[in-house]
Image (tube, rainbow, N blue to C red; front, side, top):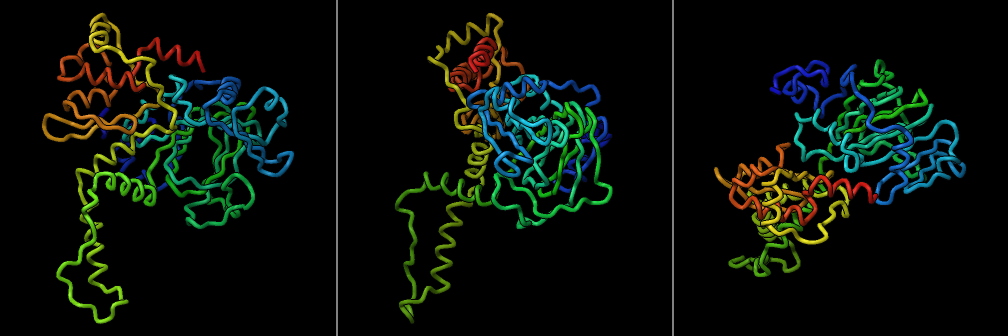
Length: 396
């Protein structure tokens, strides 16, 4: 779809208009964003996911038995849900797109944003009164109402140091003033976009309230500086050190003068200021799996000729749910393909195909080195055969 084509998902705005005028600037309420949406899960299925090992889930009770705003972390069991009150609680399950293909398919609607910016899709269920309190997120999020109704109230953009309630496992704002006019009840198919730093409070007003949260991440400056410095540090020789050859004799031996500080500044900046190296780090960090154990390597390496034969027989590989792909051109013919925190040099057309929604069939074998790269990604768990994916889901 053209970037200038109006989209119902964006309330009639084109992708270009949305990114220019709304993205990371202001909230946007969109009625009927996905009018034909069918919720991919029902509450019982979401609760079932929350009982599985390896799935991040939380239960938030506003009026907990032990304290207000009590938080429990999964995995849960049936007894946990049986003991819940009739209202004022919420179940939140992270990264549902990693486990449910129908949820992952919702990402196709957000193709106007870089896929590597995606964090995950969280789904929440809440009976009447259920919420997680007024709070602020430091990421962009699209809040899509999948079933039931939820009331959303906004409190404007707040400072980073806005006071939060002490002593609870949630970052609930001490003060929340609703902005006049920013108070809506969302129906199924409605969606609310929120940029980072915007105070908001969502409360269920039905007994079947399910909300799909499509979140987009951005590394903080402290995370980025630390991560990039570590990445660069691994490549620097021990012989590259602070140097002050030719300096003038110090008037005061104990003084740390401006010239010394400038020499250290130049050493650091010259070591870090390498655009090509920065791109290689950035591609790796933005494709790292959300969870350390997300990738499940193949039980045994696949032979390249076996993979080729399977593709030529009509089989297709699939991208593993939760795996992240991106690419960056090195020149007119080659690119780095970034997959799940690693980078592989390959032909530019092959990298573009693997990082898109292109079918992974025998047509890829026309690219030099494709068979070997596909086998490597299969062995690492970033790619698999459809039957393997089905088996993995059955094992959960």
